[in-house]
Length: 190
Image (cartoon, rainbow, N blue to C red; front, side, top):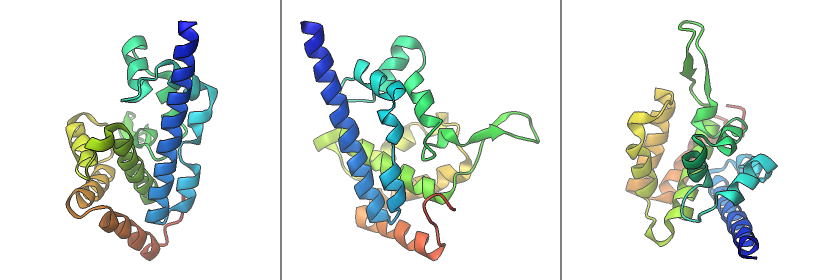
């Protein structure tokens, strides 16, 4: 009986978190002018591989993937997710012809913009009332030395997060809209 109640709580808690996050990313992507990316964002979270793990490891104050990593040593849900969602820099790695080693690859701008929208939304969802426009930048800077990310991608994301921290959402989303239009960036094309 107690297990059933916990399972139901986790199911609806995880579903609610995923839905709130997705809708917030959609809203941000719409503001940024990358509508298609917003509509397609994180659909893999509804796959059995990701959703079942999300319910099983749900806590409400952080990603269930973190808990799955603590218990299993890795997150099967995260491996599935990052392999299907181009807005994660972890997706953009390949073997270098020059070195024969796994190397980060520069992300197309449209996915950097979606990643920005994703990070802002995730900060809002997990920080709740403690959120301010510096939170996504602080989170990014906190992990900067350990990330396996292309330097140009990192620089572009940090620029957008700094713009958000210093000038606010209107300025940051306006910059993305203006740059996308000027460079004819379409969802997934450039």
